[in-house]
Image (cartoon, rainbow, N blue to C red):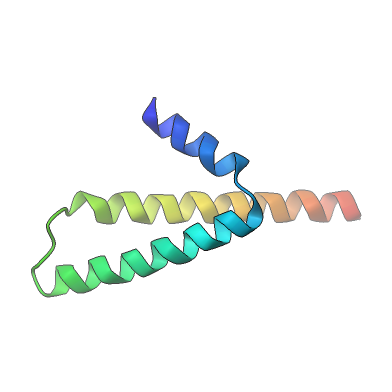
Length: 73
């Protein structure tokens, strides 16, 4: 149920909010990779969550772009 709530939160977010969240998640992903390389990673499961959330945001952005493109042309 929590996963569906997160998806719903992403769907109602504006394009600017999604872009900001994507930027934050990419920064976090970089930091997690750095921690993993130096064996300082406390929550390995966070890597998976961040990666999947990034994918969800990118998917939403591409869907919105296709919808906007179809509406124009």
